[in-house]
Amino acid sequence: MILGAQLYTVRSFLQTEKDIRRTLQRIAEMGYKSVQVSAVGNIQPEVLKSICDELSLKIALTHTNADRILNETEKVIEEHNILDCDYIGIGAMPDKYRDPRWTGYFAEDFREAAGKIAKAGKQFMYHNHHFEFEKVDGKRLIERLIEDFSPEELGITLDTYWVQAAGADVCEWIGKLKDRLHCVHLKDMAVRGTEQLMAPVMEGNMNFPAILKALEQTNAKYLLVEQDVCQGSPFDCLQTSYNNLAALGCR
Image (tube, rainbow, N blue to C red):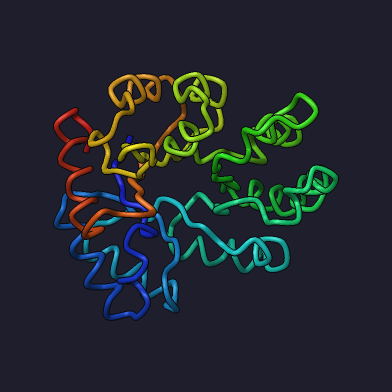
């Protein structure tokens, strides 16, 4: 499994081509070997790929606008070919599908695009938060997703923090989703009083040795460090996570 950085963590430093280059250089210097492209400003895919090649950074995954995946599927695939990126993801379910009366339409609407992505040799990836674990009529949304899509049509970018925030067992869900876990977001949870906080990996209270051991039994190819909210510099948080994971043997 290849250790990478989810660029959403440093999104404020990615809105111009000059800053993208600076930020990616810092990430490469930390020791990361891959990145997820998310919340990045306007940059041509050829330019982004060239910068990453210079820094020996593999583009593992993207979070791409859901409307573009639906309505510009071929163009999105072409862009990912340029990026040499096999995983085309969305960051969350679009709002309208979160209504239980509309949830079933998600698969109906996205199946064609997912099929085209699979035919192109790539994988459509869904990133979870905690709301997918709410039970509605006895069933969780995450369970509906894996019933409605085959593993070839939909992979899951499991986010460790949000599974924990939902009150679910991270290792259990790694086991349940193991055939779909090509990419994983590593994110820890700390507490301050009664407040839950996102934290660098192994600086919180989650059992990452057990999580990493469980991931060894899956199809996971990329372990991507993400921290949506940082207490201090997001660059410092990414470096701390890298150092802690490297000490466990992740590179």
